[in-house]
Length: 360
Image 1: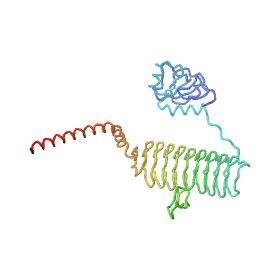
Image 2 (image 1 turned 135 degrees about the horizontal axis):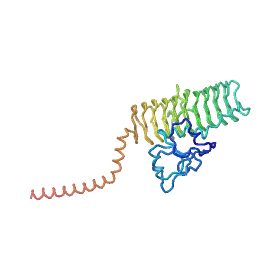
Image 3 (image 1 turned 90 degrees about the vertical axis):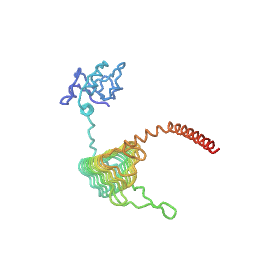
Image 4 (image 1 turned 60 degrees about the vertical axis):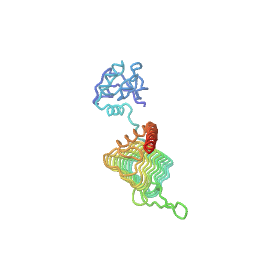
């Protein structure tokens, strides 16, 4: 990540870090610990990455005091920036070294198609190739990037950004400061069919989708409108790329949904729920506040608040671990069972022989 060349002493001014080394040297970029160069800022919380035979070439490393001692032992020659919360301090310094690009102010492009009924707030950018249908309201300070399609009756809150080629079907509402990444599809019909007359008949979806403030939606994610009523994504929720949220779901506030999570219809999650990558949740289930669903788990029944569940089917994680450990012993147990069966057969044969001798 390329930045502007600055002395370390300027980068860390008023940031709570304890420097070891020459803070007069300059940095110009940021890079991972393994590939950082002499002008790079890096970050380290895993001491196992330290190689005494090949010390890091990073110009400066933000880390803990314990790891700082290991770096000194490994003869690291750069500047060590010690912090109680190294990750947090790294990003503070990074924001000075590589500040975000200033927001463009292009206004409303003549190459965008905008229906005459659309209301657009002050300072909003609408890029070439965007398409905005009738009766849409877009708040101030928004960015609607090239190729975006916004359907009828949508509402977009202030300072929201919709990245290229994302699609908002009709009746989608986005709160303030929402970020929608490229190729996301919001408000499509859900997967609702009824088997009738020998075929699957599509059920109408007349509901809507409401995304509350400070939500971020990853690239190629799909969130369906409700069949009736609303699909809701709660405030502060962060959704990764390639996530599916089906019709009539109610996702709580400040959830984290990692990539390839699939949530079936009419699921309700509480606040601060975490779904790790590839988790699946069956329809009409409820996941309580602050519950965690482990990666690749399949949830088929309600998950109580505060619990961590995993496995297939999902169950409390300690139970799932015991089940996995038992499965690992199955080959050994199979051999033991065969051996026991042979012993039982021998004992039965001996008993029959004894019974025959007694009868004679």
